Image 1 (tube, helix red, strand yellow):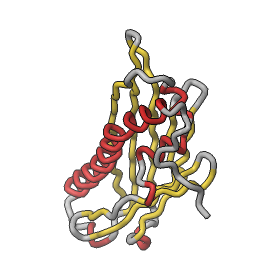
Image 2 (tube, rainbow, N blue to C red; image 1 turned 90 degrees about the horizontal axis):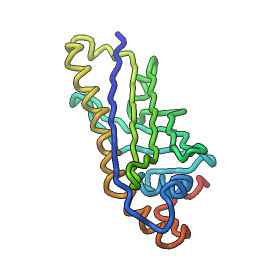
Image 3 (tube, rainbow, N blue to C red; image 1 turned 45 degrees about the vertical axis):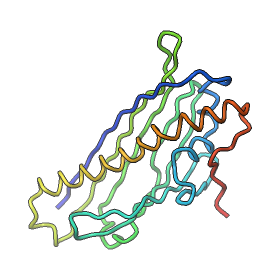
Length: 189
């Protein structure tokens, strides 16, 4: 039995005045990733690819797993940061990977409004999978609500990181004329 879970989260951040524009900061992808992801759980795989290990998650008190997602993150010529999933694993649920599909898409862009800058963004997270036989008897609506809530919580954790760390990191970076490396991510050995 196949099922799909979905969550969408929007974000809006005011950008304080600083000596360097936010667009320059957004082009520093390593610094940006370091500001919003736990460096202990993040590996740089290529110039625009990062592997993020989420904290272990429980589902319906039956399953415990750890999502590991490889993301492609890049900044286009307009200063828009794009995020797209390119690979994934579910450590602890390897037996249920048949039919599993995870898709992450995100966008963060600077927007000017009355001489002030803000960052506007959105993240879209979808999971499709074949339910394991032990869950076939569980009402599908309960499974869907639980899965959607779980995805929403993941996106809200990421949003919290953005709200609490990104602007602070940008201000320090801008004040130190761009030489600040924040919590930068080192390449995978």
